[in-house]
Length: 183
Image (cartoon, rainbow, N blue to C red; front, side, top):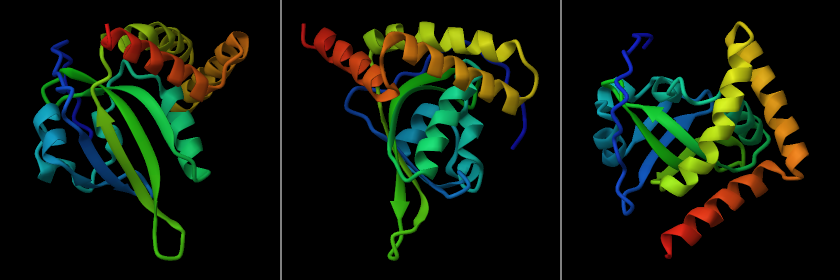
């Protein structure tokens, strides 16, 4: 599905008690989406199943984060990430995603499972400036692969300068969100 969607800037919100669930095969093609995914994104199940999960990628989401995500998944590790996705009508919605490999009976990876919750404004406000910087780096080069490479290198440099691993950054943001939510 390669139809371009005009971005509207309308935010679709995921309620705090809602959980978006999706499953993909090893290539990232959707094999399952729950009703919450359909409700928030506006897509139909028929339009999603068999399509790459990246069809909901919003252009405000750095390619570098997906490079990190796939690097982790392909090495058999789980990943947590703050992600902005695109709705069918060109809107957007933020999620805090947990993505993990799904293993078959022999222990081999057969696909991936993702559960996503509403991240809250504190977390979004903390991650958005980083994403804006990564997007600026990516915009300076041509081609999706080169953009992902440049953005990933910039992400690694920012993490090194901050003295953090990616996981530490994510948990700092999550802890700040939780502290803000408890007030």
